[in-house]
Image (cartoon, rainbow, N blue to C red):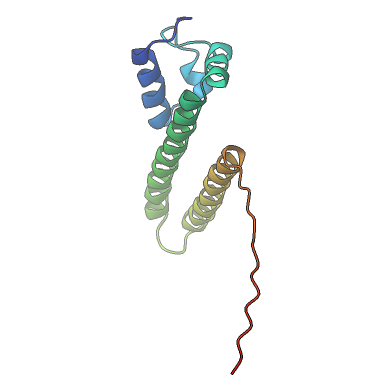
Length: 126
């Protein structure tokens, strides 16, 4: 397992995350850093951490798309009105909700919004 960060290694990490590979699986690869090492790199480098978040979000969308394709195939095999079709549609909706929830949760963790409202009083008369 590499312990030294390189630009090439960073690119490989980001590419694999964007392809939908889970970080825990990726870090089991001998060519990749351990999960703890990757976490240390992310804590030490805010820009790299942001890139990882972005790649993971892209990867979630890839996973979601692959799941939807497999669900569509199962739904078609079941025929109209079959229990397989109904179950497939139900799972498809649930997966869409879970994926959206994960993305929103990750965005909420990454974004700090500080909103202020200013009021101005305008008097209009005639």
